[in-house]
Amino acid sequence: MASRTPLPVTGAWRVGDPVGHREFFTYPADRRLALDNGSVMSGIVAAYETWGQLNSDASNAILLCHAWTGDSHAAGRAEDGHAGPGWWESAVGPGRAIDTNQWFVVCANVLGGCQGSTGPASSHPEDGKPYGSRFPVITIRDMVRVQARLADHLGVAVWHSVIGGSMGGMQVLEWAVTFPERVRSLIPIATCAQASAQQIAWGSIGRRAIINDPKWRGGDYYEAAPGDGPHEGLSTARMVAQVTFRSDNVFTDRFGRDMTGGSSSSKSLDGKFEVERYLEYHGDKLVSRFDANSYMTIGKAMDLHDIARGRNTLESAVARINSPVLTMGIWSDFLYPEYQQKQIRDMVAANGIRAEYVEVDSPHGHDAFLIELDQVGPAVQRFIESID
Image (cartoon, rainbow, N blue to C red; front, side, top):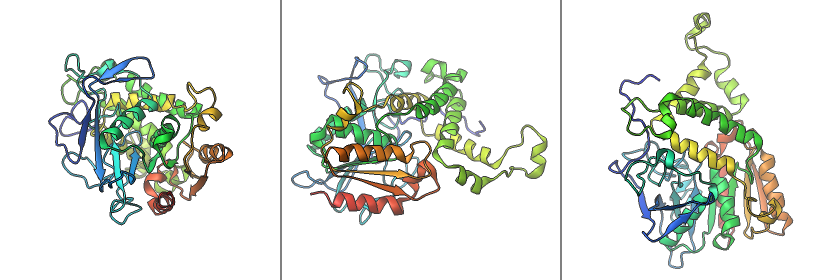
């Protein structure tokens, strides 16, 4: 990939980098986290951000859960410590759909992430060197257990609402089933109760791209020189994912069959279509702010997502949900089709729990939950304000 200055081997946030608006919660030395894979972790750190003020009875707290390559920066401008503006910048803030004059909003970087929370680029407590290949396989449920400890630290016994899209929606559903007594309402968006075979297939292609990059070094690349990290593998993985995030109509309308150098480009194998340049841009952009190991770790957790795991059946898992649910789907989303959101709505409603479904009218595909905030925002606002 072309770059005037060699990129660091990882785009992970490291101790000593600008903190931005992050705060940090560290597990007490005598508290360890038992993972679903049977191992335990100690010294876990959760990086998080907050907006608004927690009220006297801690009843106005809302948890936002980010997607695959998101982080704790849900709102706020790009600045030192934050590579870009908040991923829900237009929805969170004073007078916005999630009004921070009314709500105390929390967003934490997930376990396994690379923007301040414990992940593969973090120092292993035994030797101070990056975890790398030693980082364990984790699940969405493990991520939620860390969030629950953070909630205890913040003095939040019950969330007024837990909200998230894509992988964030998976966390919402795990909160609903793992800690039903700690949530008053739930808004899973463009997500699923169980990862489908096709969703797993897309994820496996991205992981293959990273694994086949010789600079990945089995996950132990952190001591390599700048420019010698698994950038090509991570960039390619992101390019694959980017195709699934948008719809055929959007790609056709925006790029068609145009080539970057006009008709002469078709005479060379190096000639590129405009859509190729778009994908390369997004792949290269991710490399500068993310970590290949985190991409692998989080992607695997998404593929393992199944709220029924260890709970007999999907029906018995959903039976644990006792709070009102608003599911939101996108008609043009082929990565997480709207039938998966309707399934959640129908199964919850079958148990006599309030459940609603809102469909986002957008040609943008999966990413519409980040784009169409003129539709998503009002639906979220109406729902959270209807909960006593």
